[in-house]
Image (cartoon, rainbow, N blue to C red; front, side):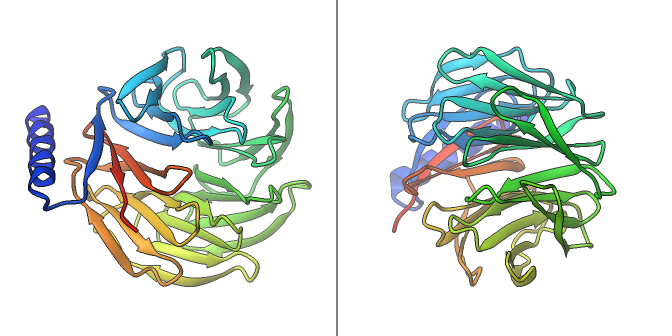
Length: 316
């Protein structure tokens, strides 16, 4: 039945596009497993996707053809993050209880980040390339040396699984979100707690800093998209944008738009900082777990439970 729905959804999206009734879907391709994470490479040439079956794909997204397939990962690839130079890729792996760093060119595993107890759900590469962060079911955030994988510090305070991580553009602040409904802000260099943003009502599933580092976006189990002022540690806007849990949020490269993906099968585009709804994309026929903008901001990719990656060209 799922495959029938997927086929109908793809055919409908194609038909609407041909009739000129919908934003163009420039590419749809299927890794044949649930897509839990995705990200464009810094140069925009590749799109990395992490699957529920433990496979990591590097795609030429303009053709929908895989450039490299890495199947040696251990368990669901819940999160992934490119290094700033695009040469390395960090993954958070579920069943294997590890983080791992891969060589993008060869697919070879370079680092094995062991130490968490329980599934690793979140990971991020620092923009300056000096450190990595991972978060897991053991309620901790772990900071690692990006060059050799040495554990630098363990950040404690969350009372549940750390589902979300983000690092500020200047690499000075680590943001973590958990099942306890809290967003914690940490000083990256010392590990000192800077503040706690109280979502409270629901687990925090996704975080992203704006390109200038002044705002932090969050999505959570209540379907609400929130914008926070990082310096003042306060909520500045929120919208009940989805009717179900919302697992993905990303700023556009210019910081003027925000994309979110949800268990309600929808991808939405928002104006920043008003959170005025700009567009709704309904091509997916199952839940959406990952969204991402191309580096030039022209394209928006999403993936989830229908096994499809959809890349759309956005209008101005």
